[in-house]
Image 1 (tube, rainbow, N blue to C red):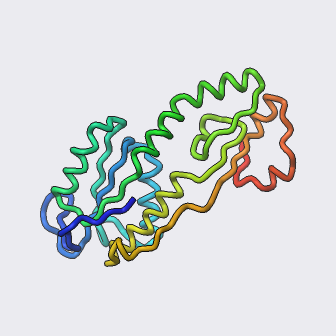
Image 2: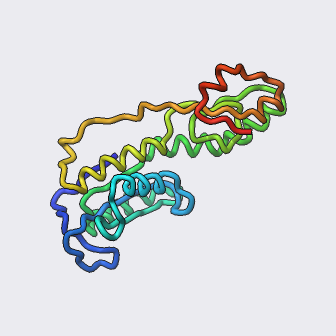
Image 3: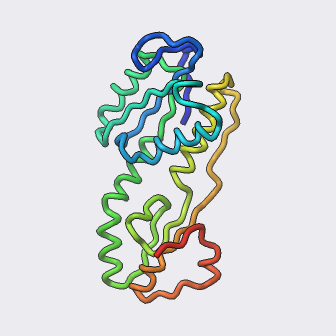
Amino acid sequence: MVAQQKGATPSSTGGSGQWVTGLPRLGFISTGGRVANAHFDSLREGLRQAGQIEGQTFLLEARFSEGENDRLPALAAELVALPVDLIAVVGAVTVRAVRRASAAAPRLVELATAARIPTMLPADLEPCEPLLTFGSSLVDGVRLMAKQADRVLRGARPGDLPVEVVTRHRLTINRRVAREIGVTVPPDLLARADQVVG
Protein backbone atom coordinates (compact mmCIF):
# COMPACT_ATOMS: atom_id res chain seq x y z
CA MET A 1 0.00 0.00 0.00
CA VAL A 2 1.22 3.49 -0.85
CA ALA A 3 -0.21 6.50 0.99
CA GLN A 4 0.64 10.17 0.63
CA GLN A 5 0.86 12.27 3.77
CA LYS A 6 -1.27 15.40 3.82
CA GLY A 7 0.74 18.59 3.84
CA ALA A 8 4.00 16.97 2.83
CA THR A 9 5.82 18.51 -0.09
CA PRO A 10 8.67 17.42 -2.39
CA SER A 11 11.03 19.51 -0.23
CA SER A 12 11.38 17.33 2.83
CA THR A 13 14.12 16.68 5.32
CA GLY A 14 17.11 14.41 5.05
CA GLY A 15 18.07 11.48 7.24
CA SER A 16 19.99 13.79 9.59
CA GLY A 17 16.92 15.91 10.25
CA GLN A 18 18.31 18.84 8.22
CA TRP A 19 16.32 20.24 5.33
CA VAL A 20 17.24 18.88 1.91
CA THR A 21 15.77 20.97 -0.87
CA GLY A 22 13.97 19.27 -3.74
CA LEU A 23 14.20 15.64 -2.61
CA PRO A 24 10.94 13.85 -1.77
CA ARG A 25 11.08 11.57 1.24
CA LEU A 26 9.66 8.05 1.16
CA GLY A 27 8.74 6.24 4.36
CA PHE A 28 8.61 2.45 4.61
CA ILE A 29 7.20 0.30 7.42
CA SER A 30 7.70 -3.45 7.77
CA THR A 31 6.78 -5.95 10.45
CA GLY A 32 10.04 -7.76 9.74
CA GLY A 33 13.66 -6.83 10.38
CA ARG A 34 16.10 -4.82 8.30
CA VAL A 35 18.48 -7.72 7.59
CA ALA A 36 17.47 -10.06 4.74
CA ASN A 37 14.10 -8.33 4.36
CA ALA A 38 12.89 -9.44 0.92
CA HIS A 39 10.12 -6.84 0.83
CA PHE A 40 12.42 -3.94 1.68
CA ASP A 41 15.00 -5.17 -0.83
CA SER A 42 12.31 -5.55 -3.52
CA LEU A 43 11.05 -2.02 -2.92
CA ARG A 44 14.54 -0.57 -3.30
CA GLU A 45 15.25 -2.68 -6.38
CA GLY A 46 11.94 -1.68 -7.96
CA LEU A 47 12.70 1.98 -7.37
CA ARG A 48 16.18 1.54 -8.87
CA GLN A 49 14.67 -0.06 -11.96
CA ALA A 50 12.30 2.90 -12.25
CA GLY A 51 15.28 5.28 -12.28
CA GLN A 52 15.03 6.44 -8.67
CA ILE A 53 18.41 6.81 -6.94
CA GLU A 54 18.38 6.85 -3.16
CA GLY A 55 20.04 10.00 -1.87
CA GLN A 56 19.94 11.65 -5.30
CA THR A 57 16.31 11.61 -6.44
CA PHE A 58 14.62 10.69 -3.14
CA LEU A 59 15.33 10.02 0.52
CA LEU A 60 14.31 6.78 2.23
CA GLU A 61 13.21 6.47 5.85
CA ALA A 62 12.60 2.84 6.84
CA ARG A 63 11.19 1.52 10.10
CA PHE A 64 11.09 -2.14 11.18
CA SER A 65 9.09 -3.62 14.06
CA GLU A 66 11.25 -6.78 14.18
CA GLY A 67 8.12 -8.90 14.66
CA GLU A 68 6.83 -6.76 17.54
CA ASN A 69 3.63 -5.45 15.96
CA ASP A 70 2.67 -3.38 19.00
CA ARG A 71 5.51 -1.05 17.94
CA LEU A 72 3.87 -0.27 14.57
CA PRO A 73 1.80 2.75 15.73
CA ALA A 74 4.88 4.41 17.24
CA LEU A 75 6.95 3.73 14.12
CA ALA A 76 4.21 5.18 11.92
CA ALA A 77 4.05 8.24 14.18
CA GLU A 78 7.81 8.70 13.75
CA LEU A 79 7.45 8.82 9.98
CA VAL A 80 4.53 11.23 10.11
CA ALA A 81 6.47 13.53 12.45
CA LEU A 82 9.54 13.72 10.21
CA PRO A 83 7.57 14.37 7.88
CA VAL A 84 7.64 12.10 4.85
CA ASP A 85 5.92 12.70 1.50
CA LEU A 86 4.48 9.21 1.17
CA ILE A 87 4.54 5.97 3.11
CA ALA A 88 4.87 2.47 1.62
CA VAL A 89 3.53 -0.29 3.86
CA VAL A 90 3.60 -4.04 3.43
CA GLY A 91 0.18 -5.15 4.72
CA ALA A 92 0.68 -6.27 8.30
CA VAL A 93 -2.16 -8.81 8.22
CA THR A 94 -0.73 -10.54 5.16
CA VAL A 95 2.79 -10.51 6.55
CA ARG A 96 1.65 -11.90 9.90
CA ALA A 97 -0.15 -14.71 8.10
CA VAL A 98 2.98 -15.57 6.14
CA ARG A 99 5.12 -15.37 9.29
CA ARG A 100 2.77 -17.78 11.09
CA ALA A 101 2.87 -20.14 8.12
CA SER A 102 6.65 -19.82 7.93
CA ALA A 103 7.01 -20.77 11.59
CA ALA A 104 4.92 -23.95 11.31
CA ALA A 105 5.68 -25.02 7.75
CA PRO A 106 9.21 -26.44 8.19
CA ARG A 107 8.07 -28.93 10.84
CA LEU A 108 4.95 -29.88 8.87
CA VAL A 109 7.00 -30.46 5.71
CA GLU A 110 9.53 -32.51 7.66
CA LEU A 111 6.82 -34.79 9.05
CA ALA A 112 5.07 -35.12 5.69
CA THR A 113 8.30 -35.94 3.86
CA ALA A 114 9.18 -38.60 6.43
CA ALA A 115 5.75 -40.15 5.79
CA ARG A 116 6.26 -39.81 2.01
CA ILE A 117 3.33 -37.39 1.72
CA PRO A 118 3.55 -34.65 -0.98
CA THR A 119 3.32 -31.09 0.33
CA MET A 120 2.31 -27.85 -1.39
CA LEU A 121 2.78 -24.40 0.16
CA PRO A 122 2.18 -20.79 -0.93
CA ALA A 123 4.80 -18.95 -2.94
CA ASP A 124 7.68 -17.46 -0.89
CA LEU A 125 7.90 -20.58 1.30
CA GLU A 126 10.35 -22.45 -0.96
CA PRO A 127 13.01 -22.53 1.82
CA CYS A 128 10.73 -24.93 3.73
CA GLU A 129 11.39 -27.43 0.91
CA PRO A 130 7.90 -28.69 0.08
CA LEU A 131 7.31 -30.63 -3.13
CA LEU A 132 5.53 -27.63 -4.71
CA THR A 133 4.95 -23.96 -4.03
CA PHE A 134 2.39 -21.99 -5.99
CA GLY A 135 0.75 -18.58 -5.90
CA SER A 136 1.44 -14.89 -6.15
CA SER A 137 4.49 -13.62 -4.31
CA LEU A 138 4.58 -10.82 -1.75
CA VAL A 139 7.92 -9.90 -3.31
CA ASP A 140 6.19 -9.30 -6.65
CA GLY A 141 3.57 -7.24 -4.83
CA VAL A 142 6.22 -5.01 -3.29
CA ARG A 143 7.85 -4.52 -6.70
CA LEU A 144 4.47 -3.33 -7.98
CA MET A 145 4.20 -1.02 -4.97
CA ALA A 146 7.61 0.42 -5.89
CA LYS A 147 6.24 1.38 -9.32
CA GLN A 148 3.35 3.21 -7.68
CA ALA A 149 5.72 4.95 -5.26
CA ASP A 150 7.89 6.05 -8.19
CA ARG A 151 4.89 7.72 -9.83
CA VAL A 152 4.08 9.63 -6.65
CA LEU A 153 7.73 10.64 -6.22
CA ARG A 154 7.53 12.08 -9.74
CA GLY A 155 4.51 14.19 -8.81
CA ALA A 156 1.45 12.02 -9.47
CA ARG A 157 -1.45 12.19 -7.04
CA PRO A 158 -2.16 8.81 -5.35
CA GLY A 159 -5.87 9.24 -6.08
CA ASP A 160 -5.12 9.37 -9.81
CA LEU A 161 -3.17 6.10 -9.89
CA PRO A 162 -4.86 3.02 -11.35
CA VAL A 163 -5.58 0.06 -9.10
CA GLU A 164 -3.07 -2.68 -9.90
CA VAL A 165 -2.84 -6.24 -8.63
CA VAL A 166 -0.24 -8.97 -8.97
CA THR A 167 -1.42 -11.25 -11.77
CA ARG A 168 1.62 -13.50 -11.99
CA HIS A 169 1.50 -16.84 -10.17
CA ARG A 170 4.72 -18.78 -9.68
CA LEU A 171 5.09 -22.56 -9.60
CA THR A 172 8.24 -24.04 -8.05
CA ILE A 173 8.92 -27.79 -8.04
CA ASN A 174 11.50 -29.49 -5.83
CA ARG A 175 12.79 -32.57 -7.67
CA ARG A 176 14.92 -33.73 -4.74
CA VAL A 177 11.83 -33.94 -2.55
CA ALA A 178 9.96 -35.76 -5.33
CA ARG A 179 12.71 -38.39 -5.47
CA GLU A 180 12.79 -38.66 -1.68
CA ILE A 181 9.07 -39.39 -1.36
CA GLY A 182 8.89 -41.49 -4.53
CA VAL A 183 6.76 -39.15 -6.62
CA THR A 184 7.20 -38.83 -10.38
CA VAL A 185 6.49 -35.30 -11.54
CA PRO A 186 4.93 -35.32 -15.05
CA PRO A 187 7.23 -33.80 -17.70
CA ASP A 188 4.54 -31.36 -18.85
CA LEU A 189 4.23 -30.01 -15.28
CA LEU A 190 8.01 -29.63 -15.06
CA ALA A 191 7.94 -27.74 -18.36
CA ARG A 192 5.32 -25.32 -17.04
CA ALA A 193 7.13 -24.62 -13.76
CA ASP A 194 8.69 -21.20 -13.25
CA GLN A 195 11.48 -22.78 -11.22
CA VAL A 196 12.72 -26.33 -10.73
CA VAL A 197 15.13 -26.95 -7.86
CA GLY A 198 16.97 -30.03 -6.64
